[in-house]
Image (cartoon, rainbow, N blue to C red; front, side, top):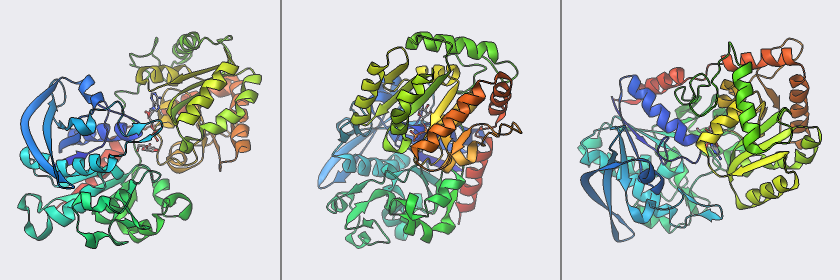
Length: 483
Ligand code: ADP
Ligand code: GLC
Protein backbone atom coordinates (compact mmCIF):
# COMPACT_ATOMS: atom_id res chain seq x y z
CA UNK A 1 0.00 0.00 0.00
CA UNK A 2 1.28 3.48 -0.92
CA UNK A 3 0.83 6.18 1.68
CA UNK A 4 1.65 9.86 1.40
CA UNK A 5 2.22 11.54 4.75
CA UNK A 6 1.53 15.20 4.00
CA UNK A 7 2.95 17.04 7.00
CA UNK A 8 3.51 20.73 7.70
CA UNK A 9 6.41 19.70 9.97
CA UNK A 10 8.21 16.45 10.77
CA UNK A 11 10.99 15.36 13.08
CA UNK A 12 13.99 15.35 12.58
CA UNK A 13 13.73 18.05 9.89
CA UNK A 14 11.58 20.86 11.31
CA UNK A 15 9.58 21.00 14.49
CA UNK A 16 7.50 23.41 16.52
CA UNK A 17 5.74 20.77 18.60
CA UNK A 18 4.41 17.24 18.89
CA UNK A 19 2.90 17.17 15.41
CA UNK A 20 6.42 16.90 14.02
CA UNK A 21 7.24 13.97 16.31
CA UNK A 22 4.00 12.23 15.44
CA UNK A 23 4.27 12.62 11.64
CA UNK A 24 7.97 11.73 11.51
CA UNK A 25 7.68 8.70 13.75
CA UNK A 26 4.44 7.38 12.27
CA UNK A 27 5.98 7.49 8.79
CA UNK A 28 8.92 5.46 10.09
CA UNK A 29 6.75 2.95 11.94
CA UNK A 30 4.47 2.41 8.93
CA UNK A 31 7.51 1.66 6.78
CA UNK A 32 8.42 -0.95 9.35
CA UNK A 33 4.98 -2.45 8.81
CA UNK A 34 5.96 -2.87 5.15
CA UNK A 35 4.00 0.04 3.76
CA UNK A 36 5.47 2.35 1.10
CA UNK A 37 5.47 5.72 2.75
CA UNK A 38 6.40 9.02 1.17
CA UNK A 39 6.65 11.90 3.61
CA UNK A 40 6.11 15.27 1.94
CA UNK A 41 6.85 18.53 3.76
CA UNK A 42 7.92 22.10 2.96
CA UNK A 43 11.60 22.84 2.41
CA UNK A 44 11.87 25.32 5.27
CA UNK A 45 15.07 27.17 6.11
CA UNK A 46 15.35 24.93 9.18
CA UNK A 47 15.33 21.86 6.90
CA UNK A 48 17.97 23.40 4.62
CA UNK A 49 20.23 23.89 7.62
CA UNK A 50 19.85 20.24 8.67
CA UNK A 51 20.15 18.22 5.48
CA UNK A 52 22.37 18.16 2.45
CA UNK A 53 19.62 18.08 -0.12
CA UNK A 54 19.51 16.37 -3.51
CA UNK A 55 17.72 18.52 -6.03
CA UNK A 56 15.59 16.02 -7.92
CA UNK A 57 15.49 18.29 -10.95
CA UNK A 58 11.69 18.17 -11.01
CA UNK A 59 9.58 21.32 -10.98
CA UNK A 60 5.93 22.23 -11.15
CA UNK A 61 3.83 25.35 -11.31
CA UNK A 62 0.82 26.27 -9.16
CA UNK A 63 -1.36 29.24 -9.97
CA UNK A 64 -2.48 31.25 -6.95
CA UNK A 65 -4.59 34.33 -7.53
CA UNK A 66 -3.46 34.62 -11.14
CA UNK A 67 0.22 34.31 -10.27
CA UNK A 68 2.24 31.34 -11.46
CA UNK A 69 4.48 30.05 -8.69
CA UNK A 70 7.15 27.42 -9.26
CA UNK A 71 8.03 24.66 -6.82
CA UNK A 72 11.01 22.29 -6.86
CA UNK A 73 11.44 18.83 -5.34
CA UNK A 74 14.31 17.91 -3.05
CA UNK A 75 15.27 14.80 -1.16
CA UNK A 76 17.38 14.23 1.93
CA UNK A 77 20.72 13.36 0.32
CA UNK A 78 22.10 11.51 3.33
CA UNK A 79 19.37 9.78 5.16
CA UNK A 80 15.78 9.06 4.42
CA UNK A 81 15.07 8.63 0.74
CA UNK A 82 11.37 8.44 1.53
CA UNK A 83 11.11 12.11 2.42
CA UNK A 84 10.50 14.75 -0.21
CA UNK A 85 10.73 18.47 0.43
CA UNK A 86 8.72 21.06 -1.46
CA UNK A 87 11.02 23.93 -2.29
CA UNK A 88 9.69 27.43 -2.82
CA UNK A 89 11.97 29.97 -1.18
CA UNK A 90 9.55 32.88 -1.24
CA UNK A 91 7.23 30.84 0.99
CA UNK A 92 9.44 28.62 3.11
CA UNK A 93 12.90 30.15 3.39
CA UNK A 94 12.13 32.05 6.59
CA UNK A 95 13.37 32.06 10.19
CA UNK A 96 10.24 30.35 11.54
CA UNK A 97 7.71 27.83 10.26
CA UNK A 98 4.42 29.68 10.73
CA UNK A 99 5.14 33.12 12.18
CA UNK A 100 7.10 35.12 14.72
CA UNK A 101 6.21 35.45 18.44
CA UNK A 102 4.25 38.56 17.43
CA UNK A 103 1.94 36.74 15.06
CA UNK A 104 1.40 34.47 12.06
CA UNK A 105 2.89 35.18 8.65
CA UNK A 106 0.21 37.11 6.74
CA UNK A 107 0.64 34.97 3.62
CA UNK A 108 0.04 31.67 5.44
CA UNK A 109 -3.03 31.02 3.24
CA UNK A 110 -0.88 31.21 0.08
CA UNK A 111 1.91 29.18 1.70
CA UNK A 112 -0.40 26.30 2.54
CA UNK A 113 -2.58 26.46 -0.56
CA UNK A 114 0.67 26.04 -2.43
CA UNK A 115 1.77 23.15 -0.23
CA UNK A 116 -1.56 21.34 -0.55
CA UNK A 117 -1.38 21.53 -4.34
CA UNK A 118 2.29 20.57 -4.28
CA UNK A 119 1.44 17.28 -2.56
CA UNK A 120 -0.45 16.17 -5.68
CA UNK A 121 2.12 17.59 -8.07
CA UNK A 122 4.99 15.84 -6.27
CA UNK A 123 3.17 12.55 -6.20
CA UNK A 124 2.59 12.71 -9.99
CA UNK A 125 6.10 13.85 -10.79
CA UNK A 126 7.55 11.02 -8.73
CA UNK A 127 5.03 8.55 -10.12
CA UNK A 128 4.02 7.60 -6.58
CA UNK A 129 0.36 6.65 -6.85
CA UNK A 130 -1.09 6.99 -3.35
CA UNK A 131 -3.75 4.72 -1.90
CA UNK A 132 -3.90 7.06 1.07
CA UNK A 133 -2.96 10.68 1.60
CA UNK A 134 -2.66 11.25 5.33
CA UNK A 135 -2.89 14.96 6.21
CA UNK A 136 -2.19 16.77 9.45
CA UNK A 137 -3.92 19.85 10.86
CA UNK A 138 -5.21 22.95 9.10
CA UNK A 139 -2.08 23.50 7.04
CA UNK A 140 -2.99 20.46 4.95
CA UNK A 141 -6.76 20.79 5.37
CA UNK A 142 -7.25 21.70 1.72
CA UNK A 143 -5.75 18.42 0.51
CA UNK A 144 -8.90 16.30 1.05
CA UNK A 145 -11.06 18.96 -0.57
CA UNK A 146 -8.70 19.33 -3.56
CA UNK A 147 -8.76 15.54 -3.93
CA UNK A 148 -12.54 15.42 -3.88
CA UNK A 149 -13.09 18.51 -6.04
CA UNK A 150 -10.28 18.44 -8.62
CA UNK A 151 -8.20 15.36 -8.59
CA UNK A 152 -10.52 12.40 -8.25
CA UNK A 153 -13.72 13.94 -9.56
CA UNK A 154 -15.23 12.53 -12.76
CA UNK A 155 -12.05 10.66 -13.47
CA UNK A 156 -10.25 13.96 -14.09
CA UNK A 157 -6.98 12.45 -12.94
CA UNK A 158 -7.09 8.65 -13.21
CA UNK A 159 -3.82 8.71 -11.26
CA UNK A 160 -5.76 9.59 -8.08
CA UNK A 161 -8.88 7.53 -8.84
CA UNK A 162 -8.21 5.11 -6.01
CA UNK A 163 -6.83 7.64 -3.52
CA UNK A 164 -8.52 8.16 -0.15
CA UNK A 165 -7.73 10.85 2.40
CA UNK A 166 -7.23 10.78 6.15
CA UNK A 167 -7.05 13.94 8.25
CA UNK A 168 -5.49 13.88 11.69
CA UNK A 169 -6.49 16.73 13.96
CA UNK A 170 -3.69 17.53 16.39
CA UNK A 171 -5.24 20.63 17.85
CA UNK A 172 -8.68 22.20 17.43
CA UNK A 173 -7.26 25.50 18.66
CA UNK A 174 -5.59 26.17 15.31
CA UNK A 175 -7.95 26.05 12.34
CA UNK A 176 -6.55 28.31 9.61
CA UNK A 177 -9.44 30.79 9.46
CA UNK A 178 -9.13 33.46 6.76
CA UNK A 179 -11.25 36.08 5.08
CA UNK A 180 -13.66 35.06 2.37
CA UNK A 181 -11.52 36.41 -0.47
CA UNK A 182 -8.93 33.69 0.20
CA UNK A 183 -11.38 31.28 -1.43
CA UNK A 184 -10.48 32.75 -4.83
CA UNK A 185 -6.81 32.01 -4.13
CA UNK A 186 -7.56 28.34 -3.50
CA UNK A 187 -9.13 27.96 -6.93
CA UNK A 188 -12.01 26.03 -5.32
CA UNK A 189 -15.47 26.72 -6.77
CA UNK A 190 -17.62 29.28 -4.96
CA UNK A 191 -20.30 26.59 -4.46
CA UNK A 192 -18.06 25.25 -1.69
CA UNK A 193 -18.67 28.42 0.31
CA UNK A 194 -21.33 26.65 2.38
CA UNK A 195 -21.38 25.19 5.89
CA UNK A 196 -20.90 21.70 4.37
CA UNK A 197 -17.81 22.90 2.57
CA UNK A 198 -15.31 25.49 3.66
CA UNK A 199 -17.46 28.34 5.00
CA UNK A 200 -17.23 29.24 8.69
CA UNK A 201 -19.20 32.21 9.99
CA UNK A 202 -18.68 34.19 6.78
CA UNK A 203 -14.99 33.30 6.56
CA UNK A 204 -13.17 30.25 5.27
CA UNK A 205 -11.69 27.57 7.46
CA UNK A 206 -8.98 25.21 6.22
CA UNK A 207 -9.45 22.68 9.03
CA UNK A 208 -13.16 22.52 8.33
CA UNK A 209 -12.36 21.92 4.64
CA UNK A 210 -10.31 18.93 5.76
CA UNK A 211 -13.01 17.59 8.06
CA UNK A 212 -15.67 17.88 5.39
CA UNK A 213 -13.46 16.53 2.64
CA UNK A 214 -11.65 13.62 4.28
CA UNK A 215 -12.70 10.01 4.04
CA UNK A 216 -11.61 9.44 7.63
CA UNK A 217 -10.76 11.76 10.48
CA UNK A 218 -8.59 10.89 13.42
CA UNK A 219 -7.43 12.76 16.43
CA UNK A 220 -4.60 11.91 18.72
CA UNK A 221 -6.31 10.35 21.73
CA UNK A 222 -9.65 8.65 22.43
CA UNK A 223 -10.58 11.14 25.16
CA UNK A 224 -9.91 14.13 22.89
CA UNK A 225 -11.99 12.47 20.14
CA UNK A 226 -14.94 12.62 22.54
CA UNK A 227 -14.11 16.08 23.87
CA UNK A 228 -13.96 17.82 20.48
CA UNK A 229 -17.56 16.90 19.86
CA UNK A 230 -18.57 19.16 22.74
CA UNK A 231 -18.93 22.92 22.75
CA UNK A 232 -16.23 23.33 25.38
CA UNK A 233 -13.47 21.76 23.26
CA UNK A 234 -14.77 22.00 19.71
CA UNK A 235 -13.70 25.61 19.04
CA UNK A 236 -16.85 26.12 16.97
CA UNK A 237 -16.49 22.91 14.94
CA UNK A 238 -18.10 20.52 17.44
CA UNK A 239 -21.33 20.42 15.42
CA UNK A 240 -19.44 19.55 12.23
CA UNK A 241 -17.57 16.82 14.09
CA UNK A 242 -20.73 15.40 15.62
CA UNK A 243 -22.12 15.11 12.10
CA UNK A 244 -19.01 13.23 11.02
CA UNK A 245 -18.83 11.15 14.21
CA UNK A 246 -18.90 7.86 12.28
CA UNK A 247 -15.77 8.84 10.38
CA UNK A 248 -13.94 10.12 13.49
CA UNK A 249 -11.78 8.12 15.87
CA UNK A 250 -9.10 8.74 18.46
CA UNK A 251 -5.77 6.94 18.10
CA UNK A 252 -3.26 7.65 20.82
CA UNK A 253 0.19 8.85 19.74
CA UNK A 254 3.26 7.00 20.86
CA UNK A 255 6.75 8.37 21.41
CA UNK A 256 9.79 7.40 19.38
CA UNK A 257 11.63 4.89 21.55
CA UNK A 258 14.79 5.36 19.47
CA UNK A 259 14.88 9.04 20.42
CA UNK A 260 13.42 8.90 23.92
CA UNK A 261 15.17 6.18 25.87
CA UNK A 262 17.04 6.95 29.11
CA UNK A 263 18.93 3.70 28.68
CA UNK A 264 20.74 4.83 25.51
CA UNK A 265 20.30 8.58 25.36
CA UNK A 266 23.49 10.27 24.20
CA UNK A 267 22.26 13.68 25.37
CA UNK A 268 22.48 12.84 29.07
CA UNK A 269 25.61 12.38 31.20
CA UNK A 270 24.67 8.95 32.53
CA UNK A 271 22.09 6.52 31.19
CA UNK A 272 19.69 4.55 33.39
CA UNK A 273 16.73 2.21 33.26
CA UNK A 274 13.89 1.15 35.46
CA UNK A 275 15.90 -1.55 37.21
CA UNK A 276 18.50 0.97 38.31
CA UNK A 277 17.87 4.66 38.06
CA UNK A 278 19.03 6.26 41.31
CA UNK A 279 22.62 6.82 40.26
CA UNK A 280 21.97 7.72 36.60
CA UNK A 281 19.09 10.04 37.32
CA UNK A 282 21.12 11.59 40.15
CA UNK A 283 23.99 12.34 37.75
CA UNK A 284 21.55 13.94 35.30
CA UNK A 285 20.07 16.07 38.06
CA UNK A 286 23.51 17.25 39.19
CA UNK A 287 24.46 18.30 35.68
CA UNK A 288 21.12 19.98 35.10
CA UNK A 289 21.26 21.85 38.42
CA UNK A 290 24.80 23.00 37.63
CA UNK A 291 23.84 24.19 34.14
CA UNK A 292 20.92 26.13 35.61
CA UNK A 293 22.99 27.59 38.45
CA UNK A 294 20.64 26.47 41.23
CA UNK A 295 21.85 27.52 44.69
CA UNK A 296 20.79 24.24 46.26
CA UNK A 297 21.39 21.46 43.70
CA UNK A 298 19.75 18.85 45.94
CA UNK A 299 16.39 20.62 46.27
CA UNK A 300 13.43 19.06 44.45
CA UNK A 301 13.59 20.08 40.80
CA UNK A 302 10.29 20.81 39.09
CA UNK A 303 10.24 21.52 35.34
CA UNK A 304 8.09 22.70 32.50
CA UNK A 305 8.94 22.03 28.83
CA UNK A 306 6.60 23.24 26.14
CA UNK A 307 5.14 25.94 24.00
CA UNK A 308 4.49 29.12 25.96
CA UNK A 309 0.84 29.44 25.07
CA UNK A 310 -2.50 29.73 26.75
CA UNK A 311 -3.24 26.06 25.95
CA UNK A 312 -0.31 24.84 28.01
CA UNK A 313 -1.41 26.67 31.17
CA UNK A 314 2.07 28.00 31.83
CA UNK A 315 0.46 31.06 33.46
CA UNK A 316 -0.80 28.77 36.26
CA UNK A 317 2.83 27.98 37.05
CA UNK A 318 3.83 31.65 36.87
CA UNK A 319 1.07 32.49 39.36
CA UNK A 320 2.25 29.81 41.79
CA UNK A 321 5.99 30.36 41.24
CA UNK A 322 6.68 32.59 44.28
CA UNK A 323 5.00 30.07 46.58
CA UNK A 324 6.71 27.11 44.95
CA UNK A 325 10.22 28.49 45.43
CA UNK A 326 9.42 29.57 48.98
CA UNK A 327 8.98 25.84 49.74
CA UNK A 328 12.62 25.27 48.80
CA UNK A 329 11.88 23.93 45.34
CA UNK A 330 13.89 24.70 42.19
CA UNK A 331 11.82 25.64 39.18
CA UNK A 332 12.92 25.27 35.56
CA UNK A 333 11.23 26.40 32.34
CA UNK A 334 12.22 25.50 28.79
CA UNK A 335 9.91 27.08 26.29
CA UNK A 336 9.21 29.41 23.44
CA UNK A 337 6.03 31.06 22.31
CA UNK A 338 3.83 34.08 22.88
CA UNK A 339 5.83 37.28 23.39
CA UNK A 340 3.95 38.23 26.56
CA UNK A 341 4.61 34.89 28.26
CA UNK A 342 8.27 35.09 27.27
CA UNK A 343 8.59 38.51 28.88
CA UNK A 344 6.78 37.39 32.01
CA UNK A 345 9.02 34.38 32.29
CA UNK A 346 12.20 36.40 31.92
CA UNK A 347 11.02 38.77 34.67
CA UNK A 348 10.18 35.84 36.95
CA UNK A 349 13.61 34.26 36.55
CA UNK A 350 15.28 37.62 37.23
CA UNK A 351 13.32 37.98 40.45
CA UNK A 352 14.48 34.60 41.75
CA UNK A 353 18.09 34.04 40.68
CA UNK A 354 19.41 30.62 41.68
CA UNK A 355 15.87 29.36 42.28
CA UNK A 356 14.10 29.80 38.97
CA UNK A 357 15.84 29.13 35.69
CA UNK A 358 14.26 29.95 32.34
CA UNK A 359 15.58 29.04 28.94
CA UNK A 360 13.60 30.76 26.24
CA UNK A 361 14.09 28.96 22.97
CA UNK A 362 13.70 25.62 21.33
CA UNK A 363 16.45 23.29 22.52
CA UNK A 364 15.98 19.67 21.57
CA UNK A 365 19.12 18.35 23.28
CA UNK A 366 18.67 20.32 26.47
CA UNK A 367 15.11 18.99 26.66
CA UNK A 368 16.52 15.46 27.06
CA UNK A 369 18.56 16.56 30.07
CA UNK A 370 15.53 18.33 31.55
CA UNK A 371 13.31 15.24 31.26
CA UNK A 372 16.06 13.07 32.76
CA UNK A 373 17.37 15.38 35.47
CA UNK A 374 14.11 16.72 36.87
CA UNK A 375 12.15 15.18 39.72
CA UNK A 376 8.68 16.35 38.75
CA UNK A 377 7.29 17.44 35.37
CA UNK A 378 4.53 20.03 35.00
CA UNK A 379 1.81 19.84 32.37
CA UNK A 380 -1.04 22.12 33.49
CA UNK A 381 -2.67 22.18 30.04
CA UNK A 382 -6.10 23.78 29.63
CA UNK A 383 -6.71 21.16 26.98
CA UNK A 384 -4.35 18.56 25.55
CA UNK A 385 -5.17 16.59 22.39
CA UNK A 386 -2.54 13.99 23.23
CA UNK A 387 0.56 15.49 24.81
CA UNK A 388 3.96 13.92 24.37
CA UNK A 389 5.66 15.74 27.24
CA UNK A 390 3.94 13.68 29.94
CA UNK A 391 4.78 10.41 28.15
CA UNK A 392 8.44 11.35 27.74
CA UNK A 393 8.58 12.46 31.37
CA UNK A 394 7.13 9.12 32.53
CA UNK A 395 9.64 7.22 30.41
CA UNK A 396 12.46 9.19 32.04
CA UNK A 397 11.12 8.49 35.53
CA UNK A 398 9.88 12.04 36.13
CA UNK A 399 6.29 11.79 37.38
CA UNK A 400 4.04 14.51 35.99
CA UNK A 401 1.70 16.89 37.76
CA UNK A 402 -0.85 17.28 35.02
CA UNK A 403 -4.35 18.34 34.09
CA UNK A 404 -6.77 15.45 33.71
CA UNK A 405 -7.75 16.18 30.13
CA UNK A 406 -7.46 14.74 26.61
CA UNK A 407 -4.48 12.51 26.02
CA UNK A 408 -3.20 13.08 29.55
CA UNK A 409 -6.28 11.27 30.85
CA UNK A 410 -5.39 8.37 28.54
CA UNK A 411 -1.73 8.13 29.56
CA UNK A 412 -1.32 9.15 33.21
CA UNK A 413 -2.91 7.26 36.08
CA UNK A 414 -3.52 9.20 39.26
CA UNK A 415 -1.24 8.22 42.13
CA UNK A 416 -2.92 6.84 45.23
CA UNK A 417 -0.52 7.02 48.18
CA UNK A 418 -2.22 4.25 50.18
CA UNK A 419 -2.21 1.58 47.51
CA UNK A 420 0.84 2.98 45.71
CA UNK A 421 -1.03 2.71 42.43
CA UNK A 422 -0.73 5.30 39.68
CA UNK A 423 1.99 7.11 37.78
CA UNK A 424 1.39 10.85 38.27
CA UNK A 425 -0.63 13.57 39.96
CA UNK A 426 -3.78 14.58 38.13
CA UNK A 427 -6.18 17.40 38.83
CA UNK A 428 -9.36 18.49 37.14
CA UNK A 429 -10.29 21.79 35.55
CA UNK A 430 -8.31 24.97 35.09
CA UNK A 431 -8.45 26.06 38.69
CA UNK A 432 -5.04 27.32 39.91
CA UNK A 433 -5.83 25.99 43.39
CA UNK A 434 -6.30 22.44 42.10
CA UNK A 435 -3.00 22.68 40.25
CA UNK A 436 -1.18 23.84 43.40
CA UNK A 437 -2.82 21.11 45.44
CA UNK A 438 -1.68 18.42 43.00
CA UNK A 439 1.86 19.80 43.00
CA UNK A 440 1.79 19.84 46.79
CA UNK A 441 0.75 16.15 46.86
CA UNK A 442 3.61 15.37 44.51
CA UNK A 443 6.13 17.23 46.69
CA UNK A 444 4.85 15.41 49.79
CA UNK A 445 5.21 12.04 48.05
CA UNK A 446 8.73 13.05 46.94
CA UNK A 447 9.70 13.45 50.61
CA UNK A 448 9.07 9.71 51.13
CA UNK A 449 11.92 8.13 49.17
CA UNK A 450 10.62 4.56 49.21
CA UNK A 451 7.18 5.51 47.88
CA UNK A 452 8.80 7.80 45.34
CA UNK A 453 11.10 5.08 44.05
CA UNK A 454 8.11 2.78 43.56
CA UNK A 455 6.31 5.53 41.69
CA UNK A 456 9.29 6.23 39.42
CA UNK A 457 9.64 2.55 38.65
CA UNK A 458 5.98 2.28 37.70
CA UNK A 459 6.17 5.40 35.59
CA UNK A 460 9.11 4.01 33.66
CA UNK A 461 7.34 0.69 33.08
CA UNK A 462 4.49 2.21 31.05
CA UNK A 463 4.45 1.31 27.36
CA UNK A 464 4.20 4.33 25.04
CA UNK A 465 5.81 2.76 22.01
CA UNK A 466 4.24 3.31 18.59
CA UNK A 467 3.65 -0.38 17.89
CA UNK A 468 -0.03 -0.58 18.74
CA UNK A 469 -1.03 2.80 17.30
CA UNK A 470 0.82 2.31 14.03
CA UNK A 471 -1.07 -0.91 13.45
CA UNK A 472 -4.35 0.90 14.17
CA UNK A 473 -3.49 3.40 11.41
CA UNK A 474 -2.61 0.53 9.10
CA UNK A 475 -5.96 -1.04 9.83
CA UNK A 476 -7.73 2.25 9.14
CA UNK A 477 -5.96 2.69 5.78
CA UNK A 478 -6.75 -0.88 4.75
CA UNK A 479 -10.44 -0.31 5.50
CA UNK A 480 -10.45 2.79 3.29
CA UNK A 481 -8.33 1.58 0.39
CA UNK A 482 -10.53 0.31 -2.37
CA UNK A 483 -13.69 1.47 -0.56
P1 ADP B 1 2.46 20.37 21.50
O1 ADP B 1 2.58 19.57 20.27
O2 ADP B 1 1.08 20.81 21.79
O3 ADP B 1 3.41 21.50 21.55
P2 ADP B 1 3.33 17.93 22.87
O4 ADP B 1 3.47 17.61 24.31
O5 ADP B 1 2.54 17.02 22.05
O6 ADP B 1 2.84 19.43 22.75
O7 ADP B 1 4.76 17.92 22.17
C1 ADP B 1 5.72 18.84 22.45
C2 ADP B 1 7.05 18.31 21.96
O8 ADP B 1 7.92 19.40 21.72
C3 ADP B 1 7.73 17.42 22.97
O9 ADP B 1 8.58 16.53 22.28
C4 ADP B 1 8.57 18.45 23.77
O10 ADP B 1 9.68 17.85 24.38
C5 ADP B 1 8.99 19.37 22.66
N1 ADP B 1 9.24 20.76 23.06
C6 ADP B 1 8.31 21.72 23.30
N2 ADP B 1 8.89 22.90 23.59
C7 ADP B 1 10.22 22.67 23.53
C8 ADP B 1 11.38 23.50 23.72
N3 ADP B 1 11.27 24.79 24.03
N4 ADP B 1 12.60 22.95 23.56
C9 ADP B 1 12.71 21.63 23.25
N5 ADP B 1 11.68 20.81 23.07
C10 ADP B 1 10.44 21.31 23.20
C1 GLC C 1 -0.63 19.00 19.13
C2 GLC C 1 -1.25 18.87 20.49
C3 GLC C 1 -0.57 17.84 21.36
C4 GLC C 1 -0.25 16.58 20.59
C5 GLC C 1 0.54 16.92 19.35
C6 GLC C 1 0.89 15.68 18.51
O1 GLC C 1 0.29 19.97 18.99
O2 GLC C 1 -1.31 20.10 21.16
O3 GLC C 1 -1.40 17.53 22.45
O4 GLC C 1 0.49 15.70 21.39
O5 GLC C 1 -0.20 17.78 18.54
O6 GLC C 1 -0.25 15.01 18.07
